[in-house]
Image (cartoon, rainbow, N blue to C red):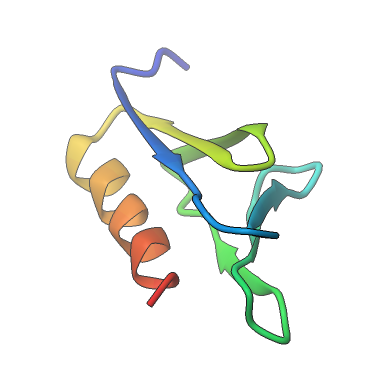
Length: 77
């Protein structure tokens, strides 16, 4: 798949981390809560964790990529 749209998210905070499972279908976020947050990745979006605090979302559809990144951003509140 050729990705046309990229969106990078940097998680800033002490102990804040992100990871993805081996299949790339679930994004795990540690954001200072007592539990991990699990997000199901949309099939048309591919997510990579370049570092524990840097998430890269890619895909062919700009709306779906930005919509998923907005969901991730809303978890930090």
